Image 1 (cartoon, rainbow, N blue to C red):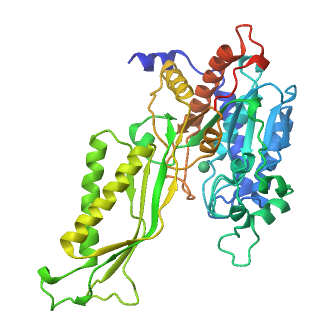
Image 2 (spheres, rainbow, N blue to C red; image 1 turned 135 degrees about the vertical axis):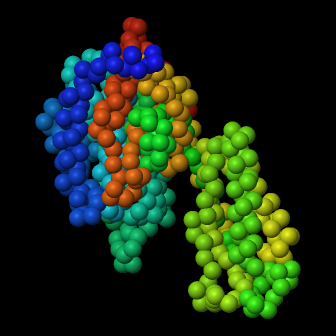
Image 3 (cartoon, helix red, strand yellow; image 1 turned 180 degrees about the vertical axis):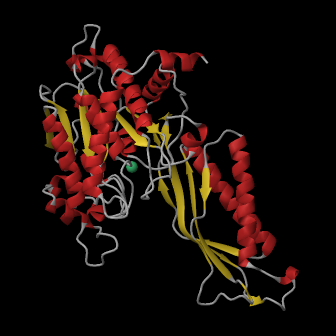
Length: 447
Ligand SMILES: [Zn+2]
């Protein structure tokens, strides 16, 4: 294979240093996040602060400047960067879910730090690294808090949310204030991110799914982040009865009706995939009522959640309309009804098509597969993209999923992903910052 020949021929001269520094940083982060089972770096709590200190120590050791921004995130930049020229921001988050893994979020921060610490700096564009806080919704019920705070995206309800799992817990606003953050401008929705000083936002993240591991590929380019439509609780209402006494044609069995619905949704899903749509369906919560269900009772009710995800709004709407049609058909055919609670929508994020194409082309140039893999999980990159910063994302292969202590990532895959970022940064530098164009005459950030 031509690609493999290229990859073998052009070994990465940075590989050994990248690997050694990455191993040291990940070990440092593991030490401060170790909870005895997995890794816990709670948003605006001591172990997240300790992870930020690991980043600060690395910055100091490599003559970089680390400063906290007004939303409490850590920004690391070169000592000679006065912060005025438009830069490429490389970011991800340092918090984790309780008993999570060491690489979800941290991998993106570490990648940025390693690239920023490389010498000579002349080969790359102005670079700033963002260690974002509170990306996980596990603690305050809202995701991407540190990133949203930069763009006026935290409303009063979000700031008043109490720490989950602790009835008398402090609010998000109190936790942020305790971490030294001035909450007033955030509550007022004041934009705190210097939009005009950002040429692009680039995020590396572990995949958190099995696609790359199954395909035997180390990296993928993420073209978009799936949005979703959800109902937390739908109730299928049939009719309870004696399991031995009611013949089949007189039953209105809610569980059989639900099974019929799932079978129809599965056929619909397969047809949509065959037509080239990006979509996933999940009913993650399914229950009969323990207060009344019994081995000998025809179930009268079953409740379930529904979630549909896609990177395309039209596909989400088509899938949702299909779900309602299937419910109507099941209701008519089986004499049951469906009660839906409020529908909740999260819009998909489209990452910058040109930057995405750049990353795919660079991957091919390095002899790597250039799979486009939409993200099923939310990421900080979505916040930057939706705020108008041209944004791109890379996935690195990982094992055992994510949000659990067994989450893993091979350092050799991470080194490959960092190499791809380095290659891309050099290409962007040549295109955006050279050809006689002063950095200050950069094209404006697209809306
Ligand atoms: Zn993450």
